[in-house]
Image (cartoon, rainbow, N blue to C red; front, top):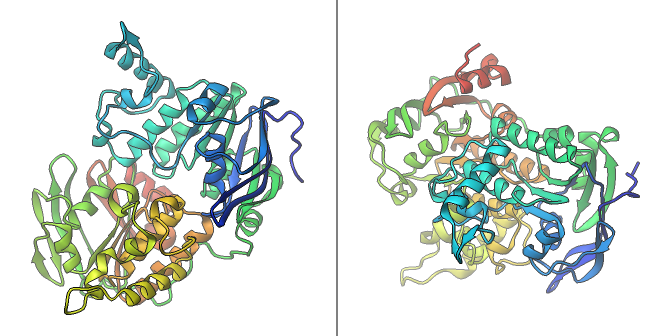
Length: 505
């Protein structure tokens, strides 16, 4: 049953958007009602972000029309959209890292005195916004010094600092822990109570079923259907979204997990880093998937960056194949066949202006060099094609710039880049962040395949079901310490969360 849209505050009629030879949207339809959460559900590349950018004034539609509050709506830019009462929190962060939290939240709307920015008023107004939203961040901190999760909270505060009739949230929880997500859910409830319409984009099905009132499914740039949440099931929505049934979200192991008596390929003992983490010890065997879970600020990503040589420990040892090693840089790590899929793909994982092909092959260029110093371009291209096909990366061509693709397809390029190096140890820091359910399943299958081939995998995730569903064992972290290593019957949501919060059952 489709929802009625008689009192729609936002109505999209036959919107089409064409980029050169690519049609990103085809006759898209949407009716959004006030005081309700309307989720847009679709795979990466389905057109969700393109549609949201049209609503925000970033793109102009090729054809079609939009009504906002019953009036024609055609914003030329995000400032026009905000003035008309529509604001968006983008999945990809649009912050200035060299500015403070306050300066980012009120960018282009700074309070002035005698023609100059009033710094005290700026801090005061931003602090009031953050306090009202109950966000655990300081407005005077430099954004570049914050974690990805904290930056996401700043992005949310920036978007919600505008009094809007329609608020668009594009993957707002993709880098948030459960506790930060709960803060956002409370904010959404307050927006609904005020009669604000919320357009919500997420790939987390449990989250969608909890928050949504209406759910619209899009596929390959086209409108499929709109359902009332009360009349929809997760299995049905996934089938509509991907065009096929999915019986298992987490594929089973191809081969048994390695025994704990086997020799570890990587062993960490007493690893510490000033003010970030302390006395971290664990080991991982060839073919094992070792999960890492913790709330924001627990130090998970910081440990991974140290293992990859991006930062240096203050004490402790790292051993590979039983021998202590010193990894002073990512080059050292790569030479030891350690790969790292970073959570921050835009700043650390990709060269956005470069092509899909060059991003996939950049770490493995030595494989394509001939004795005269020239690249074997045909082999480079053939290998890139294989990875694009294996990970189902949606791109017009290998020459397409990585920055023009959706966030999920960018993430798959980062994974493809490391698969080409055939790593013995692969660090996956939030590997499915911003990736749809269908693409997650494909990535999970690749992870299982790598483990079956003997790759040791460190899987960092903020999604507890992902850690439980994919890991053989899991290291639980809290406030920079490893509070437990759990396996078997201990790997339950209740047990892991108790260790992550420091309240042990």
